[in-house]
Amino acid sequence: PYDLTDRLALVTGATSGIGAACVDALVGAGARVVAAARRADRLDALASRHAGRVHPLLLDVRDRAAVEASLATLPAGWGEVEVLVNNAGLALGIEPAQRASVDEWQTMIDTNCTGLVVVTRALLPGMVERGRGHVVNVASVAGTYPYPGGNVYGATKAFVRQLTLNLKADLIGTGVRATSIEPGMVETEFSLVRFSGDAGKAKQVYQGMQPLGPEDVADAILWCVTRPPHVNVNALELMPERQAFSPFAVKRG
Ligand code: NDP
Ligand code: 8X3
Image (cartoon, rainbow, N blue to C red):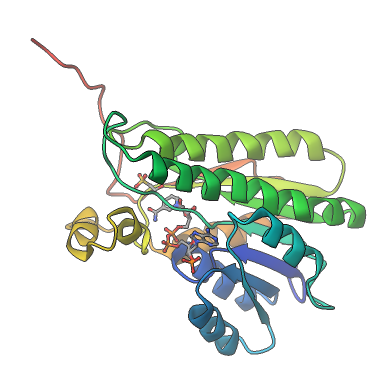
């Protein structure tokens, strides 16, 4: 497998869930990690947990100017990112399209789509120049299988999946790889965010079943990035054993 010792990674959305588990997994595999997110206290805790191996980067991926400026001015030794894990993202609400909030739709598009492309575009030229890199984008099963109330969230993840495949098409022969990771239910703060902090509603989502844990997804990501350089995992979909697909809906009468 590809050795990550002293390789540099950058993880967005590093303060919780899948992103935090990715930081742990990457550091565990010997990498150094730029950990980006908006909550400074959590970033500091992460950096002290992995003293010297994690550089905290306070960043809102929706702020294009801030993303471009801070990724262009990373401190010496923390700028040549080889593995980018585009994980920052969120779902807001579960209302049908005809009742959903346009503001929430905008936030999801700004974060999951626009933020992701701006971060990617800022780091890709360096990867191509160095002839080595890997862009791992966290999409979702929601980008492939529709469900009621998934509307714009699912559409942002379909964007992420297709963008990843198109990156792969552009990057052929450059030594830079691209992978779409497509998890089903993972117990993180995802549902807490989706239901505006309603812990009871969030807990119900995972009631009576064993969801994936964030470390299961981080483990899959680590597997992808440690394949030998001639291997590109295009897309990887994973679900809890206790989750599957719904039949078609039919409205009668
Ligand atoms: P969490 O809510 O636990 O983590 C989301 C992370 O994204 C947090 O660290 C948050 O940090 C960060 N984030 C949110 N908005 C921004 C922003 N504007 N700028 C920078 N960072 C941001 O959820 P998950 O770990 O579950 O989600 C991670 C990714 O996985 C998302 O893209 C999600 O869509 C995807 N996913 C989740 C699944 C699940 O069931 N949980 C299944 C499939 C995919 P902070 O608030 O500090 O900025
Ligand atoms: C998160 C998975 O099915 O809750 O992307 O939308 S789902």
